[in-house]
Amino acid sequence: MQTLLGGNGTIGSVLAKELTRYTNKIRIVGRNPKKINESDELFKADLSDPEQVDRAIAGSEIVYLLVGFEYDIKVWRNQWPPLMRATLDACIKHKAKLVFFDNVYLYDIQAIPHMTESSPINPPSLKGAVRRDIAQILMEEVKNGALTALIARSADFYGPANEKSFLIETVYKNLKKGKKANWFVDAGKKHSFTYTPDAARATALLGNTPDAYNQVWHLPTDPESLNGKEWTELFAQELKTKSGLMVLPIWMIKMIGWFVPFMKEMPEMMYQYDRTYFFDSSKFMKRFPFEITSYKKGVQEIVASEK
Image (cartoon, rainbow, N blue to C red; front, side, top):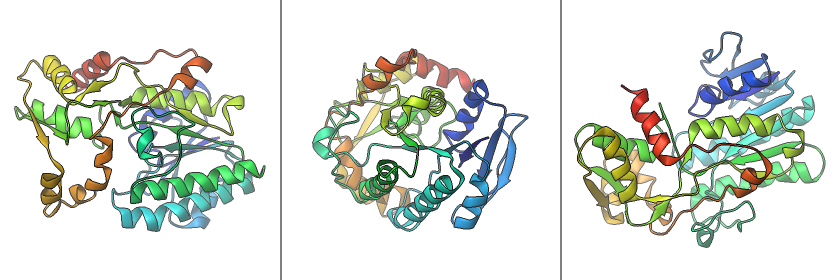
């Protein structure tokens, strides 16, 4: 049994399809789980309850932690540490391997222009501190031999049916509506994005590769890297529309945050947009035969998926 905690989210819904390459025993866990594949087992659980986490993981060979909480630092502080602890305890108890789908928030600000698995961990944001803490307790259990686990780390992502992507929400959807695309702080800076179907396919591969465990992996991401203007032009070209762009300075983002709660969470993350943001996945590419989706093809597939 391979179990997805948060299996109907942005990554889980694609990952469940990819896992059919390896198994026909897939368990989807959530408050209101829905089948992705006909043979999926559904397990309704409140993951804030450690006992329910334990029952959801019982009988699993591999567990994928894919939960995406509300983008609110209070929620992250209150919910991430206990969920990670409950997941680790259950995996150790039931001798299940763990795959944790992570982001780059824990890296030092100076690492952002070229992030690798060995980049220094020194988060400059409150959200990054939460991610550092939960990744550290996972790796501590690995180091002491209690747990077999890996961290699959992604850059900001984009892809079809992805409503949690900055790129989709502020560039693609705006252009599609005939509006100007929005970008944060500096549209001249390069910014990597991981394509969600690639991330899911690679996560399934890692989870089913025994010697991939007990380490961190950057998920495959196009090494080309485009800046805000180039991303806007790429989407506009595929949509056959005008390539308009408006850059939002930090003061405007803070002002918008007075009226839009989500935007109130964004100013501390603007260090990811005022400099080059390059996500290096060469470790993965050297280990596995994998065809990365180019940015051009990814944009084409996103636009085609909604026609």
